[in-house]
Image (cartoon, rainbow, N blue to C red; front, side):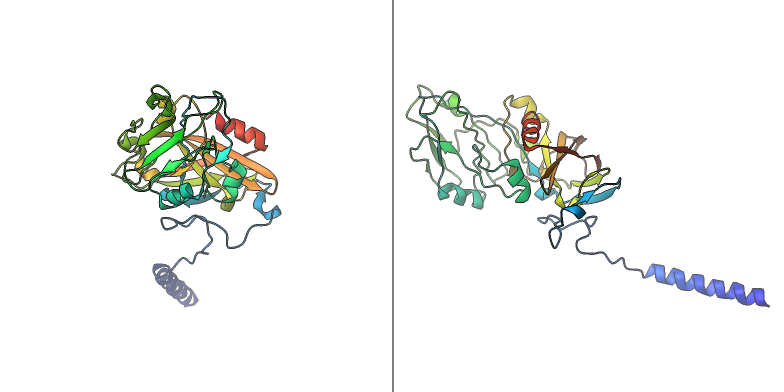
Length: 305
């Protein structure tokens, strides 16, 4: 009889347990990095993490998933102007920043933002172009015109990238358009050479790409990690290197595209670097180990990618 009661009690408990499981709702902290975030959001802690708690001294593995439209792509292009030995020591005015904020055109030059500041701002980079002191003339709109002074030193390289929001990415080398070295290089939107096919850089068709980062060993907290994707096809087109940044959804790169995933973080005064070769897929789980580097080492490593 006792056994019957015991068995019956266990059966009732099992039924209750199964019913509870069927109605179980997983409660997750809003700052849990394993939760897939809506597009346009980056996982950040509610409050900054103390330096001590932002570093792990024991091996552990965790996962963070970042939405595809907040991953920074670091394209590389060097545009060289030829002219006199007048130094380029002036920065562009607020008019460029206005265009940048509208995302109609992004112009990349020798940025005053260091890699450290890039981490601290979460990718919101203020970009500038160095020029020789003459007026940098621009006209807003889809059909834009730029006039860049040609008076610059032979050793000065003005890095520039043109990006338009109409599913087209166009590139131009100022030197190729200079001709007989006029006072200005005049570039209009219909004169730009297409260096990279839109299908490889910013295509109309998109696919979902989610990157799950698994950190093991000593390193930063996941909440402090910033991910960057460098498509490999750019390396075969442009031989010179200059690290720039632009928000291009990684979903607009084709699947199976070979790329380098860069993970950067900063805890206190320590800079952390992790890198892994990847092939873009709709869902990626990437193991990542970090190495502490100095600012100089970080800049040298990134400049060689």
